[in-house]
Length: 496
Image (cartoon, rainbow, N blue to C red; front, side):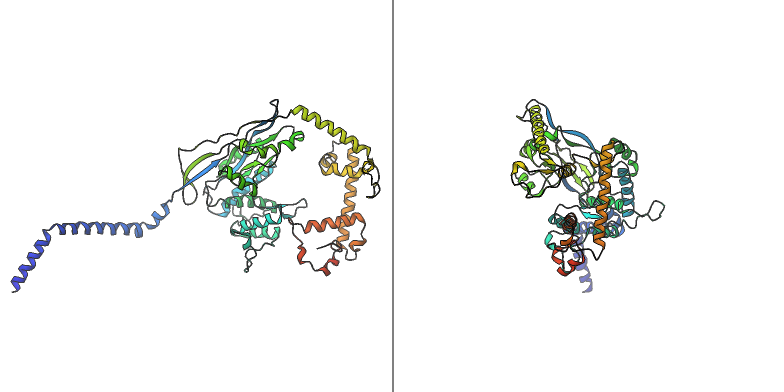
């Protein structure tokens, strides 16, 4: 019986071995074994190596603006055109893997720009006022909060002032700048030179580096994009930056254009001007051309704005593949060049416009001179508008305030004797007034607002308005204790 069972088993084995299914089984088993070995090699043996070499390609499109069209008068005389200019640009190439190396490079770059009097551009809305104090450069309180929203990385202004206090909106410019310098994101307080010695940056030097770092952070996931560090730089700056290019990886000199208005004093109200597109303007422009974006320079007023679609031209398109870090891997061949905007010819005769301007200027000057008096004039002294008298000091104030008379020219050593005498009198009077204001603010026993002289009362009102303004916001009106106003003469009698 055992022999019969053995023969039966051998017969079954023989059938299996000689069948096609067995051959398929061996083939699949071998393939599975090879697959397991390969997966073991990829995941265990060389897993970290393959992970490092892995590259994720993403298809991106970059738009290049076209040159803006020129504006001519009826006789073909050019009124607005573009001039070749140079800009300093920077792109994150991935060379600098830590804050230390990147900050050192940017410190060298900002020193070069500062030596040539160039201004670093950025969307970091912090700057110094004329007294050297840090302030927000936002144009309004709403704009300041939008900046803080972007700085904190929030999706909405409503998320400011969260219960945990992580995103305060009442932070002062100095407090925010201190956070920037000490944060791990920028690490400006821990900067060391090439020898490892600690470096102490001035606030101005640190702010310039922070300007560029903030601009780079806005393109952290789009490293193929280039940001502008300084516009319309001089030839000396171009040469200096080019000379140190080996130490400034990612920095480049790019050709650009600047808008130039010939005889702008005569045609400014007609031609208008260009500037960065505003948020409310962007939506209407995108309805006509979807390629407009928030970085475009467009016409803001006058002919520049009304003929924007004609002057703007068409953007060039560059298609490329970038890796997961935003680095450029490959540029496609199907890119298109930008198309320049069309020129515009106005019906205005430029020479006639200038002649009329000078005639009106002479007439207005004659009217003004006939009403000037060298004394103060009470508001209700002349009710007849044709007999109104104008104090000559008001005329001088407006000439200085509108930059018709230049104080820097008056104080120049090469100015004539009369100009220097006028400036000396102005400087001594300015010093006297500033000393009186400082004394009034520092003295606890100074008189209340209502008892101050009219000129001092005006100064105090100006100081109070400035400190409570939306841009500065040092004093918050809604949080002032009415009883505390009497501690400072500038607050007494002022409405909060």
